Length: 187
Image 1 (tube, one colour):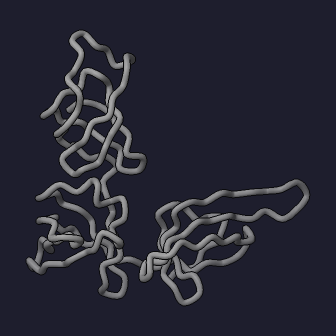
Image 2 (spheres, helix red, strand yellow):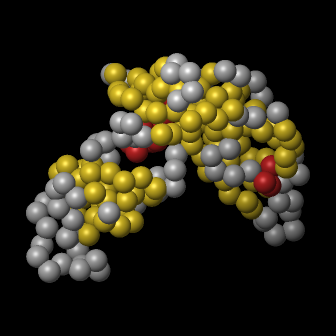
Image 3 (cartoon, helix red, strand yellow):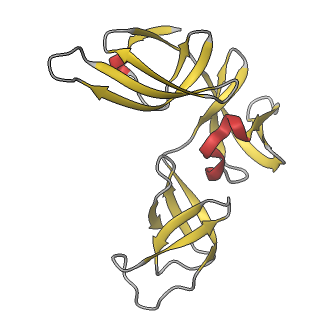
């Protein structure tokens, strides 16, 4: 564990909060008039998946969890479990949809992903900033449409629905931002 000031909390960090290990989902720094600055945070408990809202004083000290990240290959989904294989020793790790959260929507078989471990237990993923996904269902493209024209929903191979420009068709590959789930470009 390493210690840091609450004012340095960032989205995605894993910290110790009481006896729980929590992932920071949202952070808002607030300085109301002549009062002390504070940090409002929304966090998710890793073990029981409950949401926690907390207001830290800006100078409060929080314990950051030290994670071990291993490069693993995503193999397949089996019900609510996602199976990953360690690239060095070929060990397989199963992660549930609760642990993965929204990251599950960006996983394509054979992708190499950073899996985060805390005390030998997998606690999450470190996704790349963008992923390329295949469009499997969308309305037909409009001939001559430009990027600034209308938008439409498109379902990609992982089940994620992305708002795309009207020139995107089925079987096109698109680049999606993993933080926001937004369409970036056609690949």
